[in-house]
Image 1 (cartoon, one colour):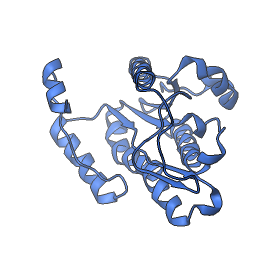
Image 2: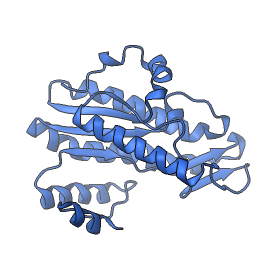
Image 3: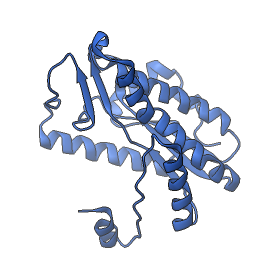
Image 4: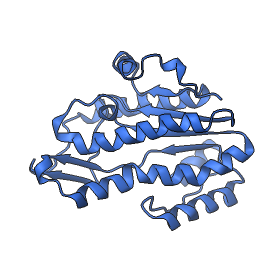
Length: 218
């Protein structure tokens, strides 16, 4: 079911704006089109991503640039594009989504992917300082360790053909539903760190210490 059909069923209006987050002009068009169509943008969720994995000596600088342009700079472009719109109004919520490995690395084959998300986590953490006192909430949503990996838009170097991560369909569906619920709860009750799976919180707390010190509500 497409977004238009789904929105009709729940009684809301939706629009779809094709965007290449790797392109400055395309992102500017997204910002202009979204504000023109809806009047204002209250929530920005940066969830776009590609997967780059494999042996470091097999991964080229072009592969790195391909991944970082989407996973890191894509979120930077959309964030900076909508930021002034939110700060001028004194309200809004920016949520950047990262992999668990971007916060707590643990897989030698996903170093590039985790590196991009680690940079996005640092960007998000710094953004909380810049938006302090503006009324704009900033959150980092950390995907569950059990979250299914990206199956499309993937480059694997030195690992053979990518065949998925072996997650059973039903388990993958449950993980997605759990994380969707966590994200919605994080929108209703803004905070800096939103865990896709509460079971991951102890490990995440090792990364940030006192998570409450990172105020999402400013």
